[in-house]
Image (tube, rainbow, N blue to C red; front, side):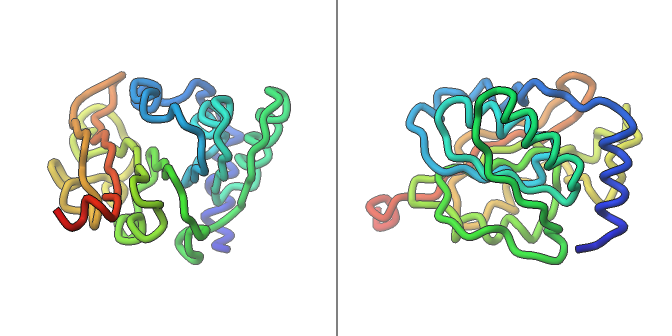
Length: 192
């Protein structure tokens, strides 16, 4: 584990309160999550999205480099009567947990290399949903810094082996994000 990354994020998680409400993009797509299954929340922080999905009956695993964030997510889940699987993991040094997953969530964590493994980790018909800041976000915000921002229009090219079913780049709540849903084709769809 990269101690400096963990220390950096631990400090950020202790300096200020983090949102507890789930991402509006996730909630606006609630209709996609009517049949519970297995979900992975990548770099899920204090669990706002993981807890929302777990409260709907999903078996959710949340990962984060910050042990403080993972502890907060676990405590919040327990206080809500929800079970979460928590993994403290440095994704710069370790692989994502093996699937198959029905849903992978990636909100505000950009590692372009991860997109190449999503199709392999998803069940046929499985979804990736997320929201990532674009370079235009720097017009109004100092963070995230440039290496962690998508170029405008970049996201569709990153989706490898998946069908992009929903996509939007726009300002929302003072942040410019690329919001997306992508689906792994079922085997019957691959031959058509």
